[in-house]
Image 1: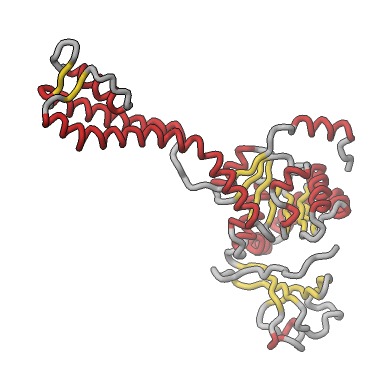
Image 2 (image 1 turned 180 degrees about the horizontal axis):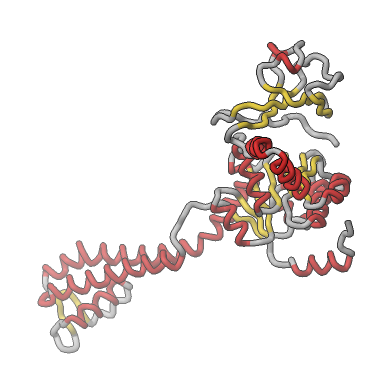
Length: 364
């Protein structure tokens, strides 16, 4: 595979000089314009109510110009009163009008100011609240999963890991498309808009403190650059990547990926298997879909299973993980099961079925 030359990489970097930023999932709120319109509507309601209250008691008011109070004068008085301007040309002179100003007009004036000032303060404090939320999110983020690419592969990967018990708060999506990040935050995941081949973008996702990294980009050369950058920032994280062409898998492993999935070859083998045996193809597809039908589960060996051979275990054992080796169930090196072994088994999917996470640090 030919990687882009230095001039191409530089040109791509220039094209991605847009500001990268973090977007956290938010509760469904009204559009800001709609919020302002609603507050202005309430302010107008207060203004109209005040004007009609004054007009209803117009005999208790005096106008310095002509002495009479009409509907326009009532709206004028309500406007200058609620805005605390108070020119004094229209004044309450009767006891009833003054009592109305004390117990009705003054509370309406306070309400009017709260509506307008509250809108301004909310706009001014929104950025401060967002910065505080981001800082709190960064300080609490540890041992999370970073998913690069929110296309079909990325979405499926997230769905699978979340089906095993991973909380949505522990997933960070990185994608250059703002629409993709909006979709991710709408699903409850934190997102970072930017090019994942750049270290500052991955640092925004706190990749240096991530436990596992899933690379699901659209291009193989991009996956290689992301793997190189991610491995440089985090030496201990488990990196799993997808490539389209099988010939690029060795290069991706050399770039730091612990496991590489060849999407084109895997789909082709599944197609071929389905042609030869539709039933076998259905079983394989069922195994791939986490949480339904049959599931492939990795779990530790329990004490009651120590000293037994894989065939004697109650579950259907496919492989035995011993150290950094994955041995087939019929491999002669397996012998009997040890307490430190882990079993990869096929079980019937239930709501409580989970893939036990590998708590040991991986060293390639």
